[in-house]
Length: 134
Image 1 (cartoon, rainbow, N blue to C red):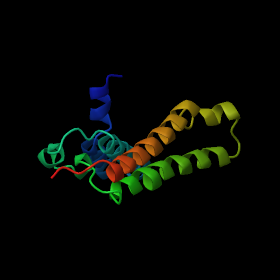
Image 2 (cartoon, rainbow, N blue to C red):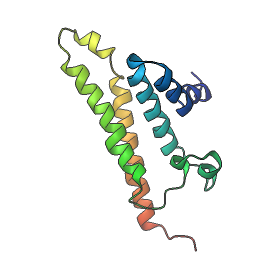
Image 3 (tube, helix red, strand yellow):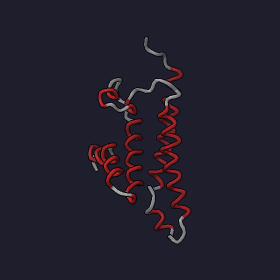
Image 4 (cartoon, rainbow, N blue to C red):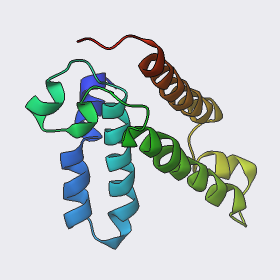
């Protein structure tokens, strides 16, 4: 899948449409899409003004170690993945192979955890140590 197609599928607008019109059975899908959209935006900050231009606060530059996006990434996003994994692991009546199909691959899960923790810690470190422009 090309990145621009993935970005369109996992977008806020798609998540909101599914949330509104998808019915009860589609609410987890909508939640997942909205989380992925925020995750992508939090890690895709490219300029000082893109967040204003697109009206997406998650695209704003990081300026404080207390930025609420750090909590979103570590608690909400990683917490969601951890809860999903636990729910799959705790399901009775399914083989190990069947359970593997219900969650992300081990490599993808670990990669997301490492990426989030690394980005959060590196960004906080840089915010604390680099001189601020006047």
